[in-house]
Length: 49
Image (cartoon, rainbow, N blue to C red; front, side, top):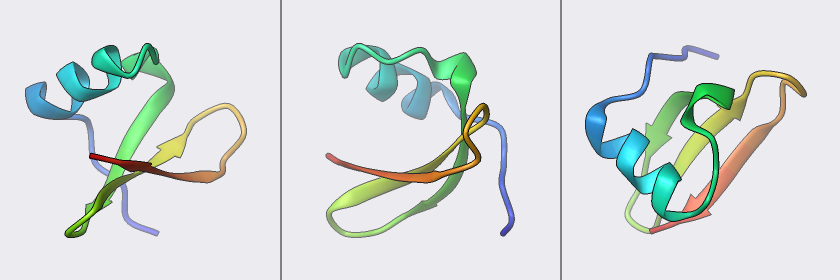
């Protein structure tokens, strides 16, 4: 699975969702959601936009 650092847009989105952006890496975006990887657990997380 390829991951990337978060962009400013993704960091702002996670903060709006009351999540810590430092805990996530970016995986992908689709029509309905962002897909992130939680660093501590190693699990993929989908969050609807």
